Length: 266
Length: 344
Ligand SMILES: Nc1ncnc2c1ncn2[C@@H]1O[C@H](COP(=O)(O)OP(=O)(O)OP(=O)(O)O)[C@@H](O)[C@H]1O
Ligand SMILES: Nc1ncnc2c1ncn2[C@@H]1O[C@H](COP(=O)(O)OP(=O)(O)OP(=O)(O)O)[C@@H](O)[C@H]1O
Ligand SMILES: [Mg+2]
Ligand SMILES: [Mg+2]
Image (cartoon, rainbow over all chains, first blue to last red; front, top):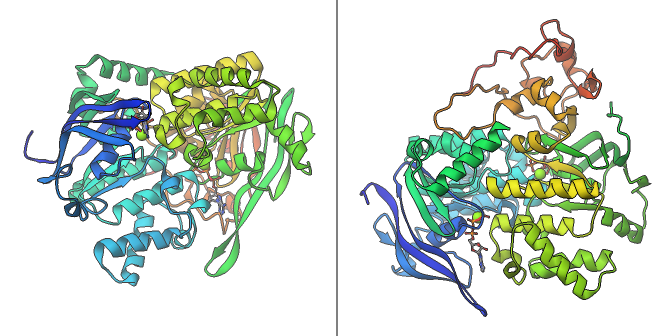
């Protein structure tokens, strides 16, 4: 692995233990995320994308156990290291935009309240300063009328707006690594393009490393430099975006590309 | 203008929903849906598209009465839904099912998938327990999942798997209308194709009508007979899918159609971007909702909401300048694209 990676995942395997036995979900997953680059993780539904992201954050659901492998973030062993050393890593240096946006917002607090809380915890700023940052962040993720929306509750937001609020929450802690699990699925193409250019801008101007989990190859082709292809919990292929799109090595990758071109040609 | 449909199984006129929200310490009215009319014929698929926050899910929720509409009438198979008792309503809901935008919050987290799928069968059919079990297995397989998933709870499934459980549940009881709110957003192309094929097959067999809410314009093009374009609570254009896609009239429709990303490396693309911000649904401008952002804006656009005007027999658009200006003749080839600076 080149040393310019911020996260190295090596032979990571794990699965679910249930009364009926052990079901493996991830099989020796290995990939690296280059600093200040946007990497895509693509793969069909159920291929283990979300479990990989949750494992990086150490918040895999109960029942999931790692059986082997390591994850190293900026020299820090996320798997075997002392738990307290992650506290500043997870949620602060690494943040995640969950696949289910509304479900991961707290329904009993206003959106502004949640943003201000996260901002204060992570940056130790005054309430007033946090409120100003929250407002700015909502505007950056293209929530119209951020001042009014600050005072609203998650259920008062449309699906796509809730998704953008989730992104604002992830960005307000100014992470070094941002994991995005299907961040634009519910968004129309115009806003999707704006959101992706906001992330690209942060990658370029602030050196953010982004990892975009998606099944939308159009978004990948336009925004990502590196690609990891997952299938049934195994990495099938990794490479630069150009390589994957112009000279895919793996048969599954080729099928994936063919399938998406087919849809497009319709 | 509402398109004339032979046998509307769902007929909606003047649907309006305003939410009361608190704004700057006072309560204010947020118009989420404003005077929307639509008809669904037996066996027809109508797509509802539009910017995030334009009111699509609210239309769906009003139709299924998850929120009470402020005004408007909804007829399902000839029956007016307003004023029904709960019992009558529950019977009506056998005929109208919904697939929710966020499957997470719509599946009861304490029910196993087997029970999620069994519930509508128990409520709305006379099947015996054994028959229901058989049907549940058939349903889960139809959406590409297996019996092993039936024992699980919703949180034990991936996003795309949960979404398919929502679809299986809606298909369980043989409804006449299914409202699908972003049903395939978490699915990869191959599973999405499989689900769309399943929906098409069921439609052909049982004449079910779909109201399909989606951001995925490729899907719209592929499956919808007609498309309705919403902007800030109103329908701004509607018509047969091919007409709307090939000859979009309303500037908003054209912006929407030009922004889709393509799965090819380095392919250039021209985008027709709208300037400025979507106005507030709280203080709606008096005229056309797009006026502030539209390159075609005329003085008359800002005084009254433009009505839907006929472009052709069943294609209509709410934009008089696009329809009547000499440089924009909808029947003489593609419309000239107004010069709008590309956003960097
Ligand atoms: N709690 C659980 N118990 C058992 N299996 C689980 C559990 N959670 C997830 N799984 C299984 O693990 C596999 C990987 O799930 P994951 O959520 O990572 O998929 P994904 O690639 O994110 O898919 P999607 O694109 O649909 O979101 C799936 O087959 C899923 O059914
Ligand atoms: N319960 C509610 N209380 C207050 N406002 C609401 C409520 N539900 C929706 N709204 C508002 O109504 C408008 C329309 O929301 P809706 O969810 O219908 O949009 P949508 O078209 O489905 O968008 P998306 O594509 O993002 O899902 C938005 O401005 C939203 O904030
Ligand atoms: Mg997932
Ligand atoms: Mg919605």
